[in-house]
Image (tube, rainbow, N blue to C red):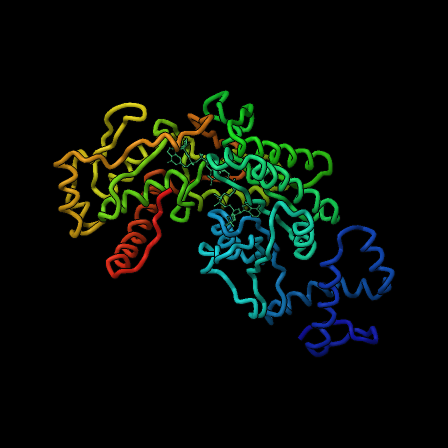
Amino acid sequence: MCLIVSDDNKSCLTRDAHLSKICLEILTHLTYFNNQAQIYYFLNGIGINRLVKLVSLFWLNVLYLQKLKLCSMKKRALITGVTGQDGAYLSEYLLSKNYEVHGIKRRASSFNTERIDHIYQDPHMQDRDFILHYGDLTDSMNITSVIQEVQPDEIYNLAAMSHVKVSFDTPEYTANADGLGTLRILEAVRLLGLTRKTRIYQASTSELYGLVQEIPQSERTPFYPRSPYAVAKLYGYWITVNYREAYGMHASNGILFNHESPIRGETFVTRKITMALSRIALGMQDLLYLGNMSSRRDWGHAKDYIRAMHLILQQEKPDDYVIATGVTTSIRDFVRMAGTYIGLEVSFEGTGPEEKGYISDLDEKVFTSRIGEASLELVREKVQRHKAIVAVDPQYFRPTEVDLLQGNPEKARKVLGWQPEYDLSALVADMMESDILLMKKEHFLQEGGYRIKSYLE
Ligand code: NAP
Ligand code: F7E
């Protein structure tokens, strides 16, 4: 039972149908209140007496409807780049926090939703809380109309051409999507009158520090971008700051250092390594070709980093935060750690393009427990014959390299209360475990005569 306003304006105890009608009327209007002019129009339209009654009873009714599971005051998030690594983890996380999640995905000639298939909801289903929209950051009209339709409380702008090396091949497209794409979102929010309602997270990056001006890098370290990707992201960073200062928008930058996971894109170095070592151990690949193995990165787990994105938008005031572990490691050492996980000691000999990696020792107990016995003999032979498993291919060198990144996450720790749960060995273990499983499946299919992906690029 619940108190409501009946059609003849008298308070009474009455049926659910009435109650739902009034709540729906308010909810419908609330959705469209973008500015004061619209609220005023609504007030005049329905009369002040009725409004007072409606508002005073609104929360009672909402509570009642919530009990009936007819209505919930869910926050609504819009995620660009929902099919990417971070988009997938963030969607899952926000759904677990009872958000209604909308995602923008690009049209592709084949399905590109592998990372979010487990949370995908059939469009014919009622009361969906995970909804996908076609879109592209290079299309202003599309971005504006999706934002108008969704009326999000929070926007996470994760979409980007995110590969640093590829950005040297596609600099104009990268500037358009990563730089101007950010502007399109900010401007759409402003033009639609959503500046007070919608909070914006911009996926900024440690690549902004490029040729680093101090170690470790904090929010106060000057930027020195070293790739078309980083220069495009520099525009994204500053236009976010500018809209915050110019229009009072709740727009924040997360300056995230490298974060990886079992669903990391296959051409980023960590995933390339964990997939290749799994394949080498199973006898599916001989050599792993890499570029600059001396560069150092501050690697964390994507699951930890998407928590930080959410925390940034829950702050009363918008601001910019470095998200990092504070630990830096070379590519070479990442290879060693991935090897150790499956009982291979990997050592390096030679320098520059002549450098090679070998299995210098084999822990058979660890190897058989993680990989199995079938390929043990093959690996023993690689050790005995001193066969290289890692080599350098200069095609992976970059015209300008970022040699070292190491973040200082002090501000995030103090203000957001953020702390990573995974250290680098836990990250490596998670990625190796997942890729061993994946490659065992592929191996099984291959043995059965099926065609499998090549994974080599
Ligand atoms: P990712 O796996 O490469 O995902 C990028 C996403 O953006 C994909 O969903 C991709 O769609 C989408 N996308 C690309 N161009 C688009 C366009 N023009 N319009 C609409 N969508 C587009 O990247 P991530 O690792 O999840 O990173 C998320 C964001 O954080 C990116 O902005 C990245 O630059 C930034 N960042 C990443 C790291 C990191 O270490 N992972 C660190 C700092 C900052 P498709 O699936 O169709 O390709
Ligand atoms: O390279 C070296 C390479 O491509 C890391 C993106 O998410 O993080 C990522 O950018 C390092 C570089 O990541 C290979 O030269 C050696 O020094 O895994 P990566 P990235 O360039 O740091 C930042 C924070 C982002 O914002 C980006 O969106 O590894 N490296 N050999 C190699 N890199 C690749 N990809 N492939 C190699 O064979």
